[in-house]
Length: 103
Image (cartoon, rainbow, N blue to C red; front, side, top):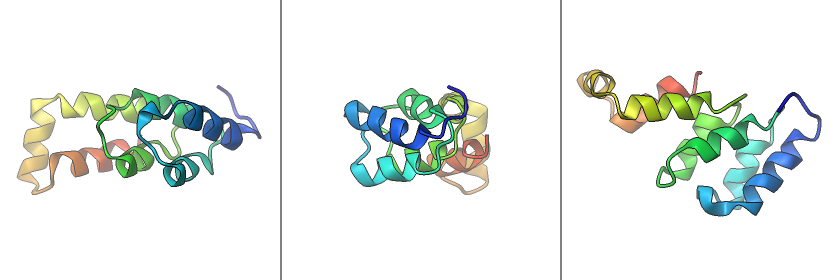
């Protein structure tokens, strides 16, 4: 999973081959174009299947691993995080996405 000059093509191939992740062709291109490793693939497949494709792209576009997906899943199940995001007038999913896409 180290840096690889063929990473964008391999990323797209893997995501296109296994479309259970819910991304369309445009979203696959968006998430894989700048891939330096196959981290975006690990990230995408670690996210909940029902999550919106655009949110998946935001979380995983530059991911080096599944860390953004792990952050998102943990935060969505954390009552404390959901309470704070509601107090700050942000929606749960949007606020948590902003937090986790930076990991």
